[in-house]
Image (cartoon, rainbow over all chains, first blue to last red):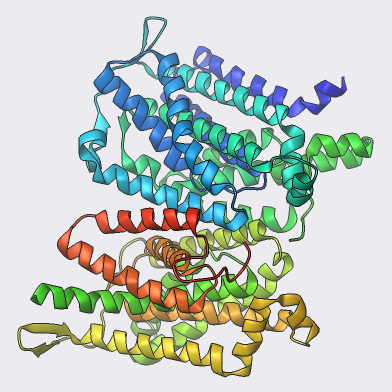
Length: 333
Length: 288
């Protein structure tokens, strides 16, 4: 029972994402299908931010790894003729993870601000590389004309089956995120709470940080594959360095203390952005406002605040409550 | 030869602008330990404020630059006093706060002035001719003002009591506070100084380059680049690195084309961050 409660967020997330597989059964209206596609891609990418925030590391590199995953899948389809969805998903996870490994080993010995700056610079580099390598990536034209993805020999070409694939990728990402954050829950929490103490107690901190970074890169790559598959093109503008802010906003606003945070945050913010579709450029201001509000008054975001309310009303035992929500308390230097 | 001299001049002018921007950025990091993601936003705000003072209020351009500097400085002061101050020791929280402010600031500008670039021209045009070389007067004036401002910042930081107090806070906040310096009074001032510098650069430079709501993004990226190259928090390092980056950008756009120069700089920065986080020139000015 306590195991179930401790993993309530993970279970709920997996159920919600799995349920989205069924959306095409209820509607074939392109609008909700497109919205669901966007939300699921946002969730997949936001898991990447969430995983890093578990260790109190903020990453701006999500678009960089999305680009690596998305382009890897596109190139495999175009030049290698690979169309199998499972192979492409695996490739989009592995390719950015391999790139992330040496970077992580070198960078994660540094702390806080330096890591943030490295990820920021990384996004800029990948964007420039995309433009400067036209033979491989098509440069400013991007890559088009990938063969349709197939699953078990069935072609996934229409709207509904693209959504099913996006949902399946998001589900895989949710399972990976839940698995890693559950297995390393205490290690990540120790790093987040008090890194020097964790280190002094014998935790090889940078091993776990590198593990988290590599998996987070892979998750972002899967989101990149879903995005390329939905848009039918791999283009540098899909992976602009500025878009990293969106994924951070989804995670922070939804709540960084639970895996449900990125899910709720993505669903809410992507829907809102679509609502004022013809004023879409103003959505950034809304994200900014929400980030400021969350940082100043509601550290746990939507999920954290809701859980704090539930705890206050229901009066859970403090120890369990602390485990269930993680920690949202501001910390000193 | 002609193109080399012209590129050098462009590089030095870019370097002077970048130095002003990077000085503000590195001051905030060195003194407060805050990575200011809103720095590019204050640059854009300075440009638009000067544009508004000239076009809507009908003021002469030099006065508009001064007022734009004041406006951005005051906004920076309030921002530090009201928001950053609450969380000043939490790097991640202040980083996200400034990020949120940047998004709000650029959206506010977008709503107020629209997405189109307004017509905002430097009041002086014409070129100075020396043999085969042509120098646009506007660029020379901006270069001179930027160099003066850099000297001013140096004088302020290294020759006045305020500067000594700020450097003391950057070196060791607890000891400085024990000596009677008050962070609560000085932090907003430092933030105002840095934001004012960004706003002034925007007011000076956007009439020559371009003014649009989104021009803050590359400014932020360049500030990062320079500050990392020079060593986070180091004032001298930032100044040297700014001119280095300006010259590399100018030469590479003349001789290489495309974004190869920028790519080379970013890769250099990544390598520096990994193997020598204290920057090209020096010591770690502040533990991150």
